[in-house]
Length: 368
Image 1: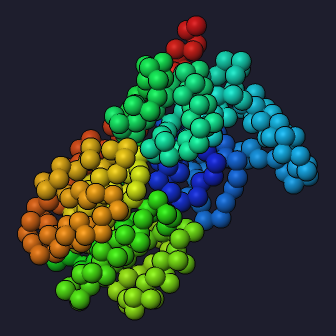
Image 2 (image 1 turned 90 degrees about the horizontal axis):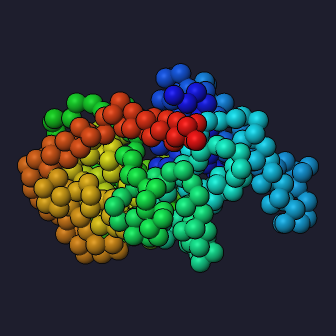
Image 3 (image 1 turned 135 degrees about the vertical axis):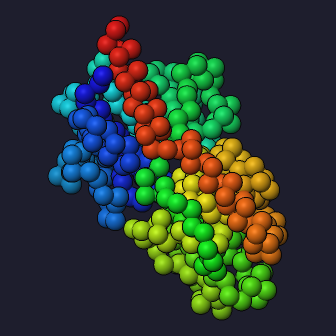
């Protein structure tokens, strides 16, 4: 069994991938592993980290920064490589985009197995030709590749597919509770980073079209991001400030959504969306875009445990919301079936899968 594990990501700001890694770090630390969380930055309003987890910042300091981008990159590269040398992890797990590329390159020749994890649709995470070239070729040098859905495999060449596995997202235990039975709040909610990809504007437009028909209902968008002010102005222009709320980030998501009538995911692209899984585990009625790379479609059996909506389709989103609000008995039955998702996402099961996989990579390296 590996004793020392390093986890690598840009920062721990509030988002789905960051939440997965923090949850995993907590589990590993509580089960006797020496866990080092390596991040390039430390941001405000981050997820809290278990005090047993060591935090290391890999970015260069202001004093180390020069006017040359090339020199700065070399210094960042060597600083990260020196962290691996100093911490001596028996396996490195990296999350997202360029972090995965850097984890492979900076650990090259050190004898440390590396697992890279793609957390979104690969074409979005590797958004230009150069990054796609590196991902498709460098990932063949990784010891393990963790993908979110079956659809993700099609992005990579065969030599990478052979190393790839799908591991479910660890879900915080606070979402596993008895499904609420009773009169639900007249709220439609979504949770996530408020950016263009989440396409909250589409959801706002869909709700605006049915707002008069359901005067007791509110739409609440939990989260923060660079589109929040734009959306607030959009809502103000519709004169729906009392009906569409954007309260920002909250710490008690399970409590906030527990009695909600509908949970909506309106994203253009996703991996395997944690927020949707969490809502289903709690037995909410869910409506999601059928977005690449296929995560929602793997979770939702359309019309059985939720509704799928074409990406960006305001009319279909409106229609699906109306189906739910016009037939609350059906909505509750769908929520009950959605709660069955919890069986495969039990923390002890999912954390065990990640733990076993990381140990497999470490042991395989040790046997060479």
